[in-house]
Image (cartoon, helix red, strand yellow):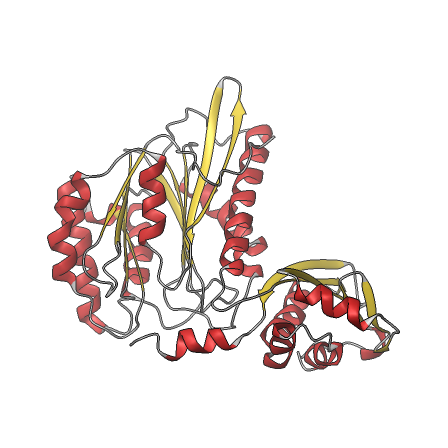
Length: 404
């Protein structure tokens, strides 16, 4: 059994230390540079954005994982600047930061994993970062507080840090899985403007971590959407120190670790959606009886990305016709006469036509912070849960002046 979710006090996996500080990248003056150091022998796997426009740190991080065959010793993250669409200068800056971190930690630059988040197209103020690295490295600590401050330093439009932990025991030994994330806008499946770092002290080969991480992302981070925009910087990194003394081997350990990783990522995904820019309602969209998972995802995305649907949710308007129209336009060759739609526990559309329901009750359900919408396609046996939000005027206000 996995342990309880850690909310206030984050569980600390063995073999990691963390630090963060303000390097002057954010106009607010808040912390914007963060470091995670892992002990020797640490392994890693990552999943990156599917956007063809990728930031310099995504290119460098992807190349470093390939070069080291999944061996990684440090993570360096800056917020306030995405280092994207910055050309060869952006790549040079990113590599310069990795070399400097490697020099100070006495590890190979290829074992330093970079990430950035913030404004696209602005040159990375690499001098500010380089000048702060000695202090950043000198203040690293193996504590839950340091990890919590790491989570705060990587935020941009987030209103709060995202943190989650699980633990399980194998005999007398304990394995901890702890994750931090940032993400609030530009959230769309196949990852998002989302940085996620999951730290664990289990011992596992990079290939094992990669297989498990890809499957976990498909069930969690690739089943959320806020605004339908796919970012240029999204990264999910799984880093294993091996310091628990427990090997990812045997059916019992594999099952326990898989469950712990899934639960941490599910929690982080839900926290990202609930902190969506301007969001008032988190919508759990259930697509039932699709032919397969891909079809269910296509239907879910069509509903979740419809501006008419999302604004109806913002007004708590039980306008199920907008949902049906979005389903019909998604490209799946379904029979509209077989589609059911539920709002909460009420059937509002049956076999593609109106079903008598209590509009006041449906409206009340949609006024709640967490709402559920059900869609039944009657095409197969696949079921999918997808998290999204409404779309409010506040989202426009946040993004209309983001760069200023």
